Length: 104
Image 1: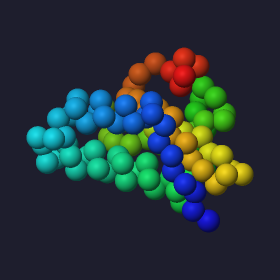
Image 2: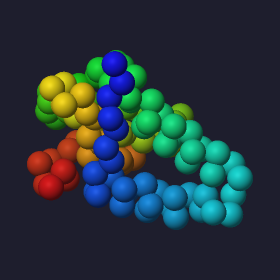
Image 3: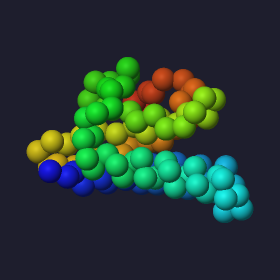
Image 4: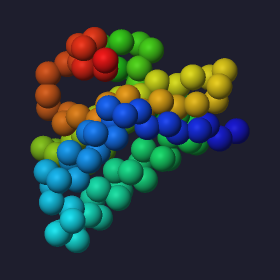
């Protein structure tokens, strides 16, 4: 059964910031990469538990997208009872580990 993928306001802001940073509005290659990231996020509707738990907190999982050195982490949680995936945060993979305030 498919899960509903919900992108939280924080993750929406992360996506908007990333779109601007990579200049996806003016680069076909960047736009293709950005669309691939969004497709990867939406693919969580099927088998969201396929990605590993984050090292910071077992209740969260992370989807890695991209190639080194441009890997991004999509932090999300799976709500089994509601059959829902909540995408919480999108960040560069090389950044420091998450803190509780990163998801507030």
